[in-house]
Amino acid sequence: MSAVPGHLRRFLPSRRDYDGLRSSWKTDLLAGITVGIVALPLALAFGVSSGVGAEAGLITAVVAGLVAAVMGGSHVQVSGPTGAMVVVLAPVVALHGPGSIALVSLLAGLLVVMLGISGLGRAVAFIPWPVVEGFTLGIAAIIFLQQVPMATGTAGIPGHNTLLAAVESASQATLPTVLQTLGVVAGVAAVMLLLPRLNKALPASLIAVLLATAAAELLQLDIPRIGALPQSVSAPSMPALDPATMGGLLMPAVSIAMLAAIESLLSARVAAGLVGPDGRPSGAYSPDRELTGQGLASIAAGFFGGMPATGAIARTAVNVRSGARTRLSAIVHALVLLAIIYFAAGLVGKIPLAVLAGILMVTASRMVSRHTVTAIMRSTRADAFVFVLTALITVAFDLIVAIEIGLVAAALFTLRKFASLSGVKREEIPGPPEPGDEHIAIFRLDGAMFFGAAERVLQEISQVKDIQVAIIRLSQVRMLDATGAHTLVEVISALELRGVTVLLKGVQPQHLDLVTNVGVIRSLRHHKHLFTSLPAAVEHARSHVRRNAAANV
Image (tube, rainbow, N blue to C red):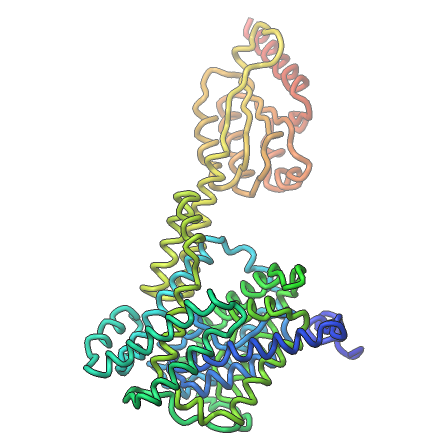
């Protein structure tokens, strides 16, 4: 460890990752078993829904889950295939085939590792809440629509427009298969929704799988099943590195990497605030190490024929609420799934695809709460607009495009708000009036003097007529950028060209270097026209007016 450079050492496992294990190993062990049981149907469902297959989903949950648990930046995060990743992977599978996903996972994982090493992990904190929730709502809608083929017993139709593909699949449904599959979906949904009301500790999704599969076997339903699964994990191998194929997969890999980074960091951030049964929060996490860990997890999954992985908030929440305190629980979760591959693959292959569709439909309906939607819609019109816009673009176009447009829209509304709080106000000269005061104007700049408000300030000050001295007060300016400083240069220059002497009062210490470097001080008629007190500036302005009056006699 001592041979590793200091700036890279923080990305590696250490003994501190398992602080408190002696007192928490029992609860960590039980939490890991619980999460493994919960993760099984989700891993299978996400693998099938993405088009890669149930095997890839299960392998990803094992390999990526284990690597991320050891190398990631959160002590309680559980990683694996997720719904958001399925949304991005499905079009890639449709265009390039299932065999391309291992290479995409490798490329995306490398990009995520680079993001972590470059220190961009904390950037997720700048994503506004309405954008995150709109993004989540859009993903939930896509996941729900993607299950329509399995729910109706039809073959999925490749295509980027999920809504049209769902409608087309539903129109091809035939009797009696569609009645049987919809009955299975309804039964799974009923168990998942009603069982937690009786006992929240029971793994509702797993029980739904067992009951629905048993019913399908007893009734001998002729509906699509998962099919044969391998009963062991194959040896790792390097995906084929065909230059032509890599060129076509590069942009999808970039989108997947961005999504993996965002979802993993959001999940880790939420997990850090979750409270376990002992009433204690999960604690802090390392954003940059979380990215490198998730990137390595996707790389490892690619070598084993899996798919890109991210932190999974639903499984992470189950982990925390089950009492997990260290990484042991996430490691155990991966080992539980590995044991299922070796000892129960034959039974898993008999699960109807409609069961997985029902699980994901219920999961999608729970991704955004009604309370959250109501709170956003009642907040401000700008935030509500950003929320709805992000959700619609997510469904209609692309997840990454949705985040980008959502961020741009949120930024524009924020700048508009800042600009509305900024402005210029003409003030009266304090104290008893003196002859010639009508030739002096005091302007107070408020709020943020930045590119969004600078033009209005320039126009308002430039419109003032019949003055000899202008005092511009800057003590209330809280934010100043280069554009705002340059606008001050333009204002001063315009007034000086009209013969108006400009005095500056109250330049903030943190803004002094900026106004000096941009040329604000240099644009003044004299370097002594910079004041720290208003009375001194007023007295100097009156001396200019008196001098002008004497010169005109």
